[in-house]
Length: 343
Ligand code: GZL
Image: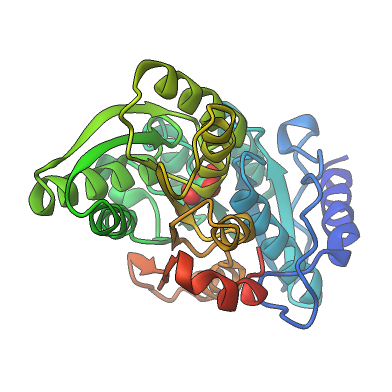
């Protein structure tokens, strides 16, 4: 039975080999279909295949944004291109930390070589990461971080610099407002390091460099387009003097754009719109004049994840933080850059 689960998961992964990864510019990245329902907690754990291949357990957060789908797409595509050397066991936690923890415990039972996952929030990981350490299974944090207290319980974090991203967004807002005005902020998932640190970077940069720009509202939109729109609607009902919105991801920015239009205002003109991620939709909105900037956050981490996992399996040490290099794009860059976007 245990082998059955792994076989099912691998089959699910293999079946996704029609997906394309972020980097395959030869094929436009298909809109990532929903990640497989092969959630680890849905089936009993399987034993690790007796082979020399690298077996990686990946406990994905879910499908909350286009960015997240891009990451899933890239990981499953890369594994499907390297089936001779990689076995990927993929679990979709459907936004729930308890499902990520269950999946990680399944991976431990299976005896995978390496566990990789994006911690949906920063806290609540000490017990399960201790179990990974006691099982001798190295952990790679992907695209988000955990509380400092767990610093010794994982091998490395592969992610962007969210504080830098928030500061870049503040510089775009500050520049386009001419240093004066009222800003609202759509925050990411409560407790997520990407949200906490983008907020830290954005708010500090504004306070340090643009003292005449005020943040008049700041509330979570949970990184989703739907909630981003809903929260922006409430902001617009409460304030008629909003000059800019900073959304912690582009999906919430696109939701805010819908709300601004439905309120009879022009996004990108009456209200400056800036996001993070660099998804294709943001570039399309900038080309349409409805968005003013996005700070890229590269979701195409599969190559780094699997190459780092192989080093960890071989007993090598790696840097504690492997930082992605990200770009900053404004409206005037969008038309030329749009064809290059792969997620
Ligand atoms: C960032 C990642 C965030 C994205 C969102 O590394 O954790 O989660 O910015 C996604 O789009 O939901």
